Image 1: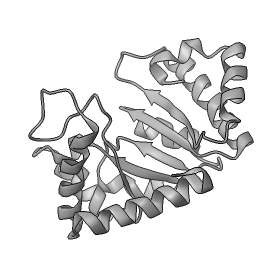
Image 2: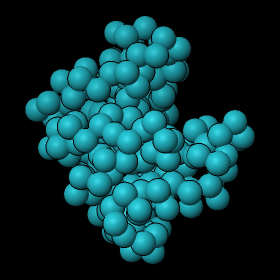
Image 3: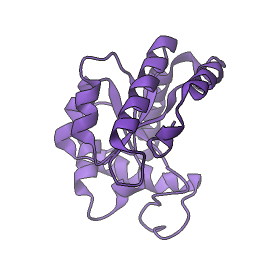
Image 4: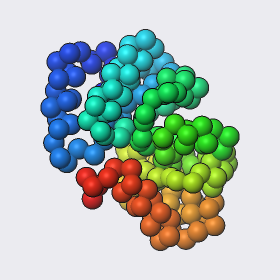
Length: 191
């Protein structure tokens, strides 16, 4: 249950999420988290929904896909002391926060904004992290060269190229790296 819809997470929804998550095709619980952009549910409602879904994932042995917008410090505080593993969806902080997220068990995932000229800190974060994923976030957050257009999965190639260049690698070797990270993170259910 995304933070925008956290108010919908009642007992019936939790029961249904648990039922759906039992399917062997499910690889993670998410996108869950905290969004302080002002477009989501009230903060206390988001926090309750986040904790409930973290506990659901833990009880099922599944990783999480975590949404964080304008709430990095708050989410890190909420995760402190919890056993968590997962993907930090659409990473939006800089290189200084990467180690804290990695220590919490989350792998930063980079989307189109990492290609924007003004987002050098995102590219630096992609360079310093020991593990990463690359994503589209389609239909949102189109990469440079496609801004203002509906994002498409094919545009992930632009993001891969930017991240590979930042890491001093080629796209093929970056793809091998991200595939290994995804397999480790999502386990035998992946691909």
